[in-house]
Image (tube, rainbow, N blue to C red):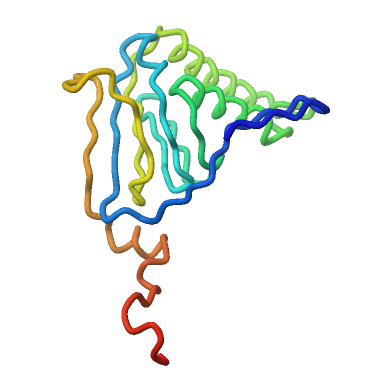
Length: 171
């Protein structure tokens, strides 16, 4: 759902999942080779991790909730979060070395959005509730694979603590 506050101008396109946990996790890998690749729609669930190894970017699950957006839109959200989340890096009292490192990193994101840097955008959702649009049935730039979650991922999701059979009996 997209909301817009007319009083303060705040906009959000965060969505709330109504689905359960799929039997398999899903990993989508998109080779971003041109600006068109950035226009792909995506749904990022709150359990989805995003990474771009070429620029050493890793965004953990829950970093900015569930979203319906485009690949470019996700890069914009990541950039906003980095600039707004820590005033000690971007504000008046910022350490100049850290500020320079952040500026260099943000420039790399800008280069991706401008189509000047080719990278692989990876969405990894152990719940299997995320989606990345394919432009055609045999899309050479997009690989989507389902995988069996690790025990650690099942534990993080709370699946190992669930009693799904004979739950009416006392433990």
